[in-house]
Image (cartoon, rainbow, N blue to C red; front, side, top):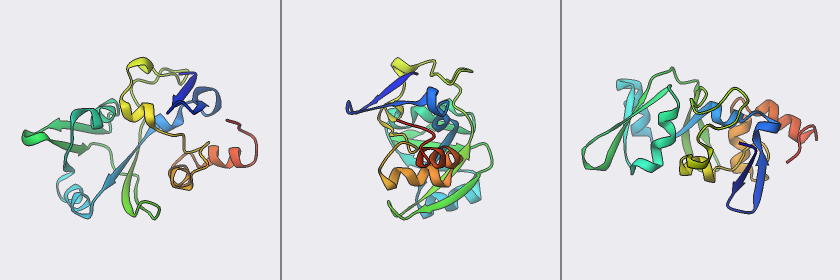
Length: 156
């Protein structure tokens, strides 16, 4: 994984700094209707193209099924860690902990060159100066890494 280019401007050294921990959880934005569907049925549906959701298939805690009409069925396999409201984007997010099955033991990505677009464009919430992005670190298990970064123990 080494250096990760994000939009060409910034580079993060994920596996050198926090061992690619952002690949060890899933944050899903949900509407109140989707949240109710999860509570009742264990899944929700979303209209989306395949590429938007491909990264989820690498996390065994979430299953994605293709439905008719361009919809996807998102099945939550593992119990949800928490559901939090993100005031920056005014939405609920489901947090499910579990590593991507494309991570190697050293924290590097097996499919780095062919990784999904979501992985390519994601900004590291630990090293970001964007408070909207840092919210994910503060409210997930990356909080320890964010605290180290704020204290100067980790650098970009």
